Length: 349
Image (cartoon, rainbow, N blue to C red; front, side, top):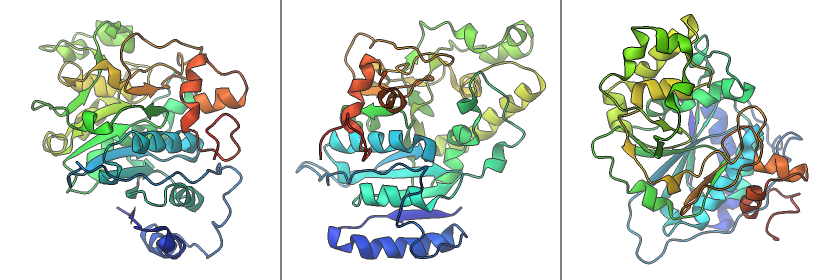
């Protein structure tokens, strides 16, 4: 699995490091890169302002916090805002190591990360889209059908063996609290921890065909299943590997190809395997649904209660609504983390 890692200690090494990482990435990604190719971002890749450097507080120890996200040029603006928010609110930002998964090598995306966050500790891994070829079923929204949306299923197979626990985050969110608080959640022996929502109508996540099938509907026997959003999860990577949860999820994807048992991309097979058997996390860690529903993306208000993470799950994305000058009220909570160079609604340099 090709990967690229970065951790430059000082700005003086930035230009030297930039040339070095291009050569390393050339071999790792088996791609030919000529010097000068990525000196200018491609037209379809946004340009970003450099984020300030964030340093550890005096009380920090050496424990690493591992965070995994996918990397897609279409969502890069969201990813940059998410990373910025995590670093800004962290007591120990230098302890955070990011693990990015991408499906297609784009040197200009890597260039954007390096120039926006020169001090960021991160690695990038290639997700082989062929792993889900023939397993993806058409869902109610095209964005949910992209192979990279399924990469979280294979996370434990991709990231290094030294990573025993990882926080997986979507790209359409911002963190407004210290991510260490989420990292320190006790999984109590469970493979996954996430905010779960037992008031949601769980039956709606599956088709009538599923619920009327005497065999399939027994999938939740012995469990009290509740909806949880897979865009914010803490995963015990060792337990995931030991239990071969990747294959368990894949088996339900295979069933879906034979019988239409759900409509929502990669979420339902997760629910079929794990719903009712996860460690519940405080709802403050996923104020989800801010992107509206999956069809129209209409504006939604914040749910009552404390907030540690804002998540624009759903069709509407804050950067698109802000650019269209038709933002929802909640989108203004995302804007301060927007590092897009041409942005007029973000913080001034």
